[in-house]
Image (cartoon, rainbow, N blue to C red; front, top):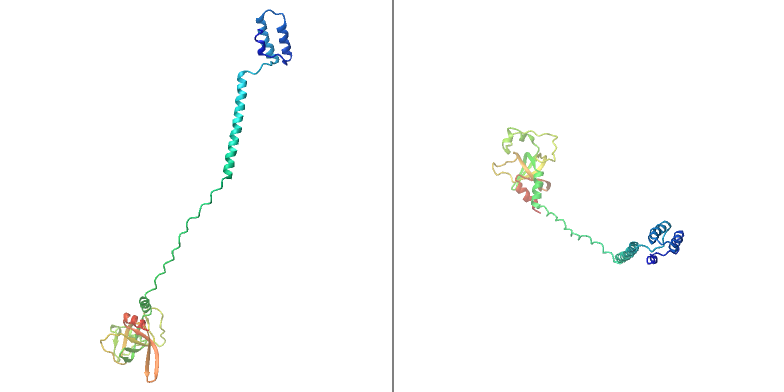
Length: 240
């Protein structure tokens, strides 16, 4: 029993410690009884025995864990500081600008085709009396609409002995195939039959510029020129 005493220090154990010392110093000869009463007294009033080995290991484990946590936080702070000090990557470059391709300008329209279109849009029905015959064509007073009615509409040429009707208030329209009104020059006419002065003609004419009409010596009138053929009208319009 005396060998077990150094294990537990009875100093500062309070009332339980005093009773334990009295028990040990008493004259009890029964060591077994002492061994049974001593733990009960110490458990009831508190013992100054050193902590058990597993408790010491628990405190040491918690201390080691705390130190490891501190080290981990230090490493984490160092890593974050390194990330903060690292220069931020440059912003991404904008996509390469696609060079603009200049719009291809449509080539200028063929002047011949432009003139052809203008001639088609300006075609007129020429129906009138022949006032003058020249080597290049006829001077016609147009506006005799009766030449477009049966039976006079069966031929492009009507002889002078016929008297077709002519409206007095006829106005020329702007649409294609309108009836031409007034004095004009007609070229590229059919060769047969031959035309005589004061005969009547009825043909489709295409605009072909201007013509200087000389009704009498020293008198010149500039009148419209038409061609019975489309290609002739285009060629005459191309001339300077």
